Image (cartoon, rainbow, N blue to C red):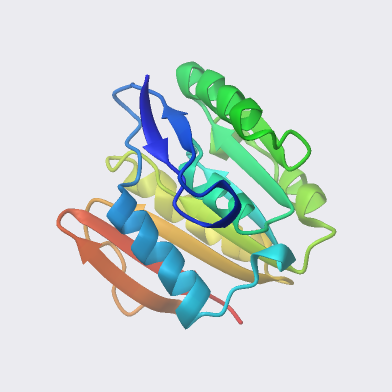
Length: 189
């Protein structure tokens, strides 16, 4: 297994394991730093007030950053068994068992009720979606689904893709690309 680094706050400079599979691709430090700088400084996000869902989690790097910055609950969703083992190890490495829940499943097989029940105590929801780049249709379907599931909450949805999929979309508040990595931030409040 390879390693990636937490770059912010409580777990700053700590390393976590990254699964070495064909379907996982850890977000680079430069992309991650840019994204979290945007969330913190441009959008003034107070992570203590958010529940985070790290979908297509892989190593869990984005969700662990959010927990490091104060999120009280992180839900990591992943279908790959090797990545699930890595996620479990990373939770132990960071000692955050009470802040992290890991769900071994395909995202499309998880009920809406599951997401609502876990997010009930939070007004603010942060969703990271970083699927394999070839999963465009699944990504777009899940994006629409999350907008509906969390319609009564304040939400931010961050999507990483391998191409520019979103043009003049409602709720799109930030877009940046780093080579062939495109980051889109959607916000409803």
